[in-house]
Structure formats: C-alpha cells, structure tokens
Image 1: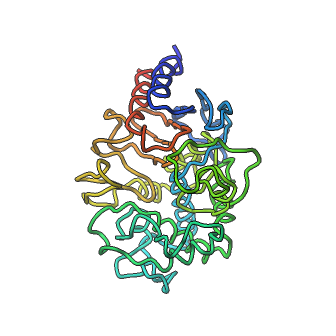
Image 2: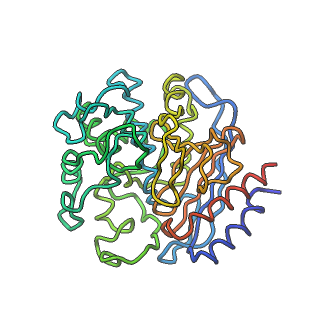
Length: 363
C-alpha cells in the first residue's frame, strides 16, 4: 500500500475541518548514496499527493509554485554556509566586521548568532522604518535592517527573528557584489537544481493563499498573492518554489548533493547552537529548550510542535507562515513537505497528523 493511500484520508479530513482549500504533500526517501560529482546514482524520486485547490479555486499539482514564507530562511542560511565553505567568511565573524554601521553590530553578535536566533533581535522590522505601502522595496527593507537595534543582549534567549537573515543577506551582498536575489540563485538555487525565484515574477502564477483579512486583502499589496509582495525579495520569507525545491533546501543540510557543503560545515549547521536556551516564537510555541542549528530548526523535545512527537530529536527543517512545512528525519530515512493554501495560524496543530500518517505508512 502506498503512503498516499494512508495519508489521503487524513489530509482530506484536515482540509475539511480546518477550512483549507488544498494542500500538496511530498515525500522523498533517503537513498543512502547521495548524488554528487563522480557519482552516477540519481537522487531518489519525489512522490507527491495533490489535494484540493488554491484560494482562487485553481487545482494543485505536483509542480505548483508556492510562496514558502520562512522556508526562505533555509536558502539564506545556505548562502552564508556556501560563502563559509569558500573561505569568504566565517560563522564566528562578528557582524561588525562586515556591517559596522548596523545598529545590531554589538559585541557577541556573530553571523552564527544571527542565523540561530540568539542575537537578541526583534521578531520583525518596525513599520516606522519600513511602512508597508506602495513605496516599499528591498532597498528600504535593507536600510531598515541596518537601523534596527537588538532588544536584548545576545545569547540570553532564542528570539525568532526575520532580522537575522535580513542582515546576513546584506553581508552576502557586500561580499559578492550582487543583489541578494542574484547571489541566492548563483550560490543555492541553480547548484541545487531548484525551480524558484526571489524578487522576480515566476514563470507561472503561484498558488494563492487564503489568509486572515487585513487592510491589504484583495488589493495589489496583498501578502503572498501579489506581484508587489513578491517584488520585495525578502530574504527571510519571499522565496517562491515548488515542493521539490523546498525538499532540496532541507536535504542540502543532510549532505545532498555530495560536495555542496563540506562535512565539517554540515556537522556545524546541524549542531545545536542555542546551548539549552529557552525561547521560540510565541505562546504556545515557546519552549524551555529551543534547539536551533545554523538557519535550520532542530526538533529536540519541543511540545507542542508542528512535527509529530515520534520525530527524532535530531530531525530538522523549517515552517512557513504561508501554511507550509518541510522536515527531514534522518532516523526514519525520509523528508516530507506540507504545502497548504491557507496561512498557518489556524491549522498548524494538525500538521503532526499528516507527519504521523506518512511515518506510519513507512513501517
């Protein structure tokens, strides 16, 4: 019996009860023999289950593009790790080495701290510095990142923040001489064979996301669904990609393809950087121990969580506020993605049911 047969009734029940128009579930098993230079073995196949539609009634398909929100942070972290692998920077470097003018460039604020959310930065930019209106663009967001100071000393709590990836993206721009969206393509998307874009219109219209109404719903400034929103090129949340792209990002932290990152960098990226600190996002996603790697969330013993309780503590991935999750469980030998068409706040507690169904189908 296929995993789709096990997962479909669970997913359909959630779609109905949580009022989610549709979801795409994708699974890729570990090959045990990563593809890489000189290796003729192909990557294991990606298997998908497409159910329902997007918010505009368009049916979902295996190659549907999604705005994957904070899964973008995986791609931004991989940019930094790739530059570390080339010797252009070190994760131990202080932010002040590259951005001395940044308000966050305080003692103890390293690139590692920025990517593991222990730099003491606020969750997001102040509307005062970056008002969400027709004049907003990446240069304005860049300047707002540089002007935003920490709210607490580094290393005190895990305070999930969009600012850390934003500042790291500016470091990437300074070192490469490229706009971040171009550096992301050169360093990460093209080498991993990912169909995706940041700050540019994709070749086909992405899935529309149902969301809580706000002052911009149904306007040209609508979050996730408008060309304006996509044009902002936010390095913490603006990537548009497929299920295959999301899975490729998280599998890169597991050494696939071989040679993309060195074994030493891979081990460092998946090492808990928070040293037992508590923290997280907001209640109830605030934990006494909040392990985090370099850009990638580690499962640990967090409860409640968007992954199943049986997930290995060393499993890892990232969630996105647009209603998506990508997760790799090395102990189970698989990676899965859930890409929904409703923002996460109303239905993330149901995601573990899908993960449990996927895992049970593997037994």
